[in-house]
Length: 542
Image (cartoon, rainbow, N blue to C red; front, side, top):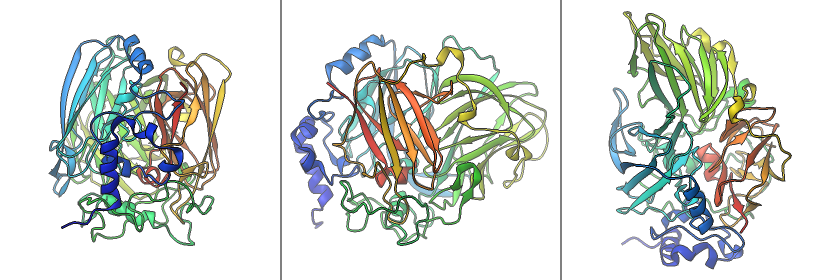
């Protein structure tokens, strides 16, 4: 008989608490509740907000959704399940949506109502976050903040209006599940599409560890969460966070794994040391992934996209990785950047792009005649993912090919300009929220403002405000920061985005309009940094 653990007791308590969870708990009683512990709650409904803040399912959220004029339904069913995945000559056991990697693409049109039923056939609670969408708050998919978990054997319907076209994706917001096979692209088409092209190619990049020689993301988290003693691999403050709320994070020493399959498995060590990249300001990452994938395939057995010479191809690039930035180039071609994170930019012709985790770029290419590698270099990690564009005869490129374009003209988001029609109107900020990125690998104490994630912590904003988020990175590692439910503008007429890289030692100030009521996460999209504390919540005041 299994002895009840802290997490199972918490799970029972959350189930009993139901929708009154956060209202009933005082700030003091919430201290020490970690993000994954919140993932064992009831499926009865979203948690209520603390007093003084709007609730995720409150009337203000319903009114905002009504103003979006929800249109015809686009119904989808997703089944999260344990399965065997073929990566191209190598099979692994993992979790996925159905038996595909990535999961089957969901495609809809602006104005549609997306109605997605998630059936949870996993041995663990899960959720769905719709990365990049400005949607109604109670559909955002953050357990313990905007909804209760979807428990094993249960299902949940996500239902919301689609108001903006673009390249998006979805994944769980439960522990480190995103670093398994639980992700898929979401494409929202524009009925007034401004681009002219002949074909479209969606390419999802990922770093892969699950099921390889006994490894799981939970075991990687447990390894990283032990820190590195006096050796601060990622630099940073090195400050002692042991007294901070939320210190009892999932996978940390002394914390039960809740029966997670594979947690603590006897796989090889996956902590990465010595990965360096000038583009990322130094340290490139924490995890030594055995594989890097393009559309779920190893470089030795890549996906091949066929077209005709002269075809104009729209490539939608998504970085679904857990700890890896990718530098992407298409051999023999230039790329014309048209969008980032779903929003139009002034076209920029480049040879390579850098994508942090969670970022998306749309590019146009005019296909040449032959066979060409689309290579994604795992920045600073000396490994590549590969897909192939074929428009004619010729041998497939070698798995290790590195086209010269990887070292050519490269663009990052800060070098782009928003297209005139999507720029935020000029306005001084009404409120500035300062978020210092703190911590390091010495103690795995990643945090904002020296405080690890606490679901009761709120940074207040008010509806109608122009809000400035000022990210100051005092660590010596880069972080891709992600804002839920909104898009922000980078400085100087920079692009509209929801995810942006903050380099070590740098400060990035971004602006957004508080026009989507509710409780919204801000976090690092390195899944291991987020799960060891670099997350917080913006809350609209009631």
